[in-house]
Image 1: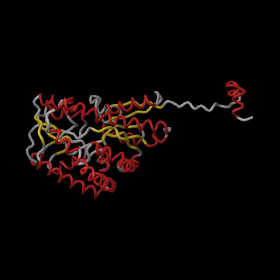
Image 2: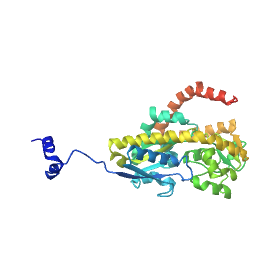
Image 3: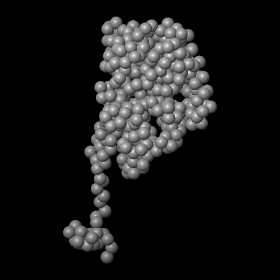
Image 4: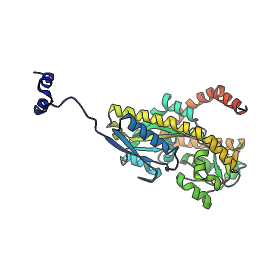
Length: 360
């Protein structure tokens, strides 16, 4: 008698008595931890991990839960790559350029000076070679990456004094988001500082910092920077479209079922789209409120932008010489960007320029 006949004739009690288990596999509940590099007070950038976690729980019917922990709760904000690499946590939500000191190639997973804007970055990652090249690189750190949001082009930061020329950067103590922009600003005479977002206000207030950049109007207003630095410059040429990423421990990811891997992939895309949309929705009102509060919103001059571009190209050439991973990925990014700049010049840029001149 075959297995199906036994089950049919003996009933469930007989099956269990015969030691034959039914072909039903109850999926065990999965509980992961995610370490963020951001403070809970920032509902936009920190909130991306919450959006992701809720999507995973919903899509798995509650069988896959990921707890989100703010920067400093489980480990330092800049220690999350070590945490994922070592398996202390299964996941992290962070900005890749924070880890430029480990290898310059990390920055290419997020933003480089005069790099891609948000849409172009997503295009390179999803339909260019970006994600493939970055994950080949991340394999050396025992992790895999997924897009986890984008802020769009950021503002150029808060300054305690006016910046009229590139010479005004000399000796300026400025908080910057990553080591790459720090190296560029050093060439321009600034003294870069790398500190978490939650510590910037106090440093500006005490005069430990002369200037600081974070993200844009909504987040910057929440952190109160306008109260301690009156000059707000734009654009943040070092972050034209910085991608925030989810890092997943490779061993933990490989252990997931195909279904749960698909859930991770889908949930990261939900969070990625949501973050940029939220910033775009909230930044305009925040900017108007900052201006109403007497913030001086000023553009970096053309000579400053040109000096910044020149310094950036010098740093990129140095990175080509010292990091083969950087050289390979950077060449692909710039090749992709050339066509993107050409395309955007004919459509998006012309449209945006015209609309900015119209009264609605």
